[in-house]
Length: 148
Length: 112
Image (cartoon, rainbow over all chains, first blue to last red; front, side, top):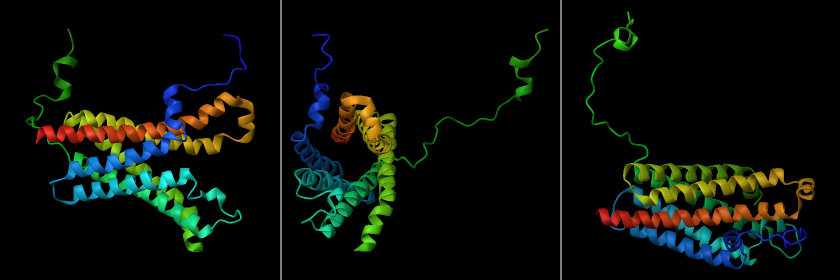
């Protein structure tokens, strides 16, 4: 068993499960919907711009992940490489591609911006320790004094 | 229509950069959440964002590095790995972000 080098290569099970063509769209649909649901639950009852930005990003991401990506994988929307083949509509392909890259990237940008505002990424934490000036200059500190 | 085509071909890089910046913001915010507020969802979001970034970089690098010559020389097994890993990274990254967000939401609920 050890010496059959011609055996076909089988990747580990989690890798295989994550990339199985039949499983991936279902997983993405569930994840996109759950992302939107969790973001909505998180921002429910709050006001201001941070929840709005988070919700905008989450809805763009949910649209991209749970509507556009499964349609691409099902072959209903054709990818950019199919442009020019007979029987395809290049305008539709370009428009769907634009919708996809805009919703994905703008979604991550808005979601990241909202999370950054929520986490206070752009704020400075004020130290509670009192500020005191050093009493001795470094030259006269005891560490550097001559021993003899 | 040609204007839109131009925008996608030339502006695709710009939009990708925006997405990468957004993912970086998600990761940094998650680290801040995990660090300052002791929210366990934060570290999960951070690892998910890291996996998504790695998957994107892998996809870009694959187009540059995996030329037909290279594919011939490295053999079938490595080709399988090179094509599966970015998919798996992006899928697991999305799962990490969503799971971490759920955990953070639970944490917020307990704090309030």
